[in-house]
Each structure stands twice: as structure tokens, then as C-alpha cells.
Length: 289
Image (cartoon, rainbow, N blue to C red):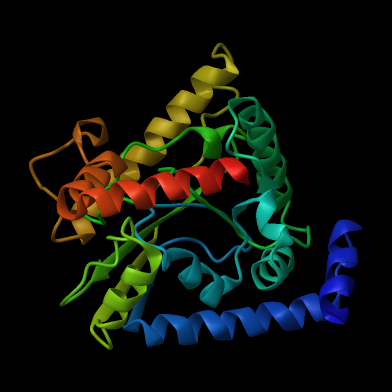
């Protein structure tokens, strides 16, 4: 409790501390052990990017395991719901990682969330700040891991250079992407994958926004759209290159039909009333927070 109070005070006042650094190292170890326990016995990192840190990262989102990877490797920060700060263990962790806290349930809070993300990306881009690399899962939900789905534009509003990262899970029994099922069931099934999952990561070269001089006649929204499409196409094409399960006959990321809706339909068709009851419960919990 004493450590928690001290860390929260430090975080709120913007100070760095040795306790935060120690806790970050502790988190990295916990995440590595957690990944091993659920079957990720091998991680193959392919760094095709530069060696400048910290980075503004845009990643595809496959599984609940994705944040564990980024924390275990670089103690990255993320976008997190403000309500998480109230939880003792999780709250301590998101504070130590210097996450960006936002309200995401109400439409009127979206602009404030975008501004918070934009401000953090600009700070990370300065390089001399104390903030860690900042990860955004720009698809806004998990996919089936086969290919990218359409990315949201919130990650591109700052027009800061982006390092795209691709996460590809090779598994033998249970696809870790199927995390739409109840969390307890998912934990049991993922644990059955013991020592049978390989996570391959591809850190792609940094992507820069449109040049100010060459595109001086464009509005900011037009530049954001160009930047968004550029990053999306690069990630989509590289997924085709590195993921053997990616469909080779689809050339445009806008043509890929994968979505959370498909996963929800599969979940409901498989479990019927149990699925409906669970999803309604999760919806009420989200609205309450």
C-alpha cells in the first residue's frame, strides 16, 4: 500500500523515481513468465527498424497476450481506461508504465482521447523525454491474426513518425486470437497450448507523415488520411509477406472482411444463450465504468 501510494503521488506530479524503474523491470519479468505459462515458449523478434528509442508504435492486435509481449520487451505504455487506475494491481501497473488514461465509452470523450494520444506521441517523438515507447493497437479490436482489419485514424493525428509492428502467432492447438469467449474459458484453453506457440514479431522501418513542403497545399485532415493509408498498406503487404496464412489474392486492406463482428457471430452461434448473457453482462460492465 505504501509503495502504491508513493508511486501514484509521483506519477500525478510528473516525477520519475527509482521505484517506478524497479517496478517496470518487475513487470517485464512477470509478463515473460505469464507468456511462457500460457504456451508462448518462443519469441522471434525481427528488428527491421532503426535503433532509436523510444518509439511511437502502431501494431496489429491479435490477442490479449499482445500487451504482455510489448511490456516484456520494452516496458511500453498504452492507452488505458481511467477506471483501471482504481484497481490495486492493474492500477499500479498502468501507472508504472505511464499509460495514457482516457474515457472511451461516451462519444463526447473521443476528441479528448485523441488529444491525449496526440500529446503523448509528440512527447515520445522528442526522444529526450522520460516516457517509454507508446503502443497503439490501431485496429481498435482484436482480429483473427490472419490479416489486418481497417485501422482507426486516432493513431495518426499527431503526424509523428510511426514504427509499424506485426505480431504473428504460430500455434498447434488453440488460436490465441479467439479471446472473444469468456475470459476464464479462454485462459483454460490457452493454457492447453503449453510450449506450442511461437510468436514472430516484425518491427518494420519507420514510416514518416507527408512532407510539409511537398504537401503544403493539403489540409491537416488530408495529411492524416494519406498517412493512415500509407501505414495501413505497408502493414497489410508485409503481413502477406511474412504470414503464410494471409490470403494472397487480396491486395487492398479495404477489401479484407475480417472483423470483431464475425467473431461475435461465431461466438453466439456456438454458445447461444450463454453467449448473449455474457455479452450483455460485459456491455453493462463497460457502461458502468
